[in-house]
Amino acid sequence: MKRYIKCSVETPKAGIFWIIDNQIVSVYDEVNTSYNPLEQDDLLHKEIWNMLKHNYKCNNKVVPYDFYPRGRVMIYPVRNSSGEFQYYDCLIYGDSCILNNSDLRDTIIDEFRLYLKSCEVSFEGKFSVDGTHYTCHNCR
Image 1 (tube, rainbow, N blue to C red):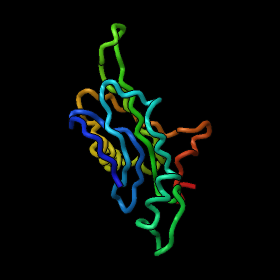
Image 2: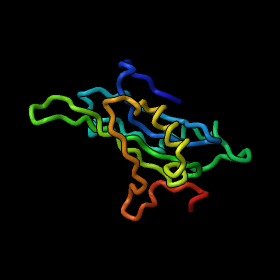
Image 3: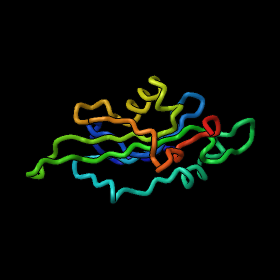
Image 4: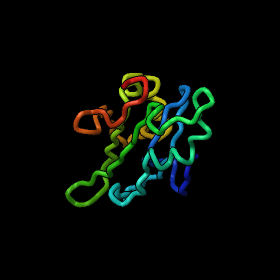
């Protein structure tokens, strides 16, 4: 399931994702220089998974939203003191089994178009105070 909003391919995407059988499953919003992450749709893994779960069973059984490794890409347009756009600050949060795998990191960068010169990317493993927000069944 992907949502498409007309926008330039020269802009990154913000959203959520799962890694299932080494493939990325993502739901995202297009971003532009006037994008405000505080006004974005609340893309919640738990809610979106309810629409996807029958397509991604394990051993022919429906699994919970936190079964597969998952993460989120958050993007903040950065402006100078004059209000002119400078670059996108791109934060990738995710399960440690994703963030410790360079191939999966590259997959996320490609999927969300974070390879653009206007993007400064950082990977954050700990989204919650104790770092357990993004933890799949294998990492628990």
